[in-house]
Image (tube, rainbow, N blue to C red):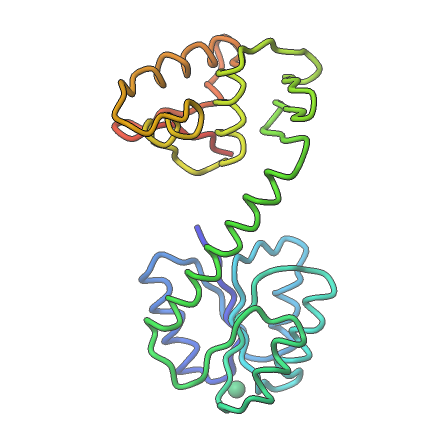
Length: 230
Ligand code: CA
């Protein structure tokens, strides 16, 4: 679930945003001043996907909160500013905010910006993980440079196709990949081909990577495709 920290001292606005985001399926927490907001933002167990940060806050203003969060975290931050002045926006972005929204705003606009930001970050993460030479999932490791797959320290021999299928799944952890998408990315098929070739290769792959008697690393999503979930 996407976790959103709302730092906003206008209680009505904070509650309204919280209600709307919860309704949209986000998990939310609200802080009403800059100090508690900063504490929540950088807490050791914090796993925020987005922080919505008001500019004018008691105790510690939004710019300062943003600056201090950025010293320890890359969490996406959207500044909320009541004043539609270029200086505020620029200064928020200068201090590491990813986007800003001017109050009063329609909730749809906020949702659209949050989704765009989350999507952008997801793409960046995907690109970064593609650049990584070693990828891991639970106790599976793939060294992409020499195409070695290991479970713990044990090397697992895979065919080229099995290997590419595994890498595709491991680079998209928690993303359900349809048979069609896997066919395109792993086999390069553009046209309609028998998608059950994917099922066959998933079975080959499971036989090689899974530990007998334990849950498969690869989950079947009925009617859709496959996913590696952590
Ligand atoms: Ca305020």
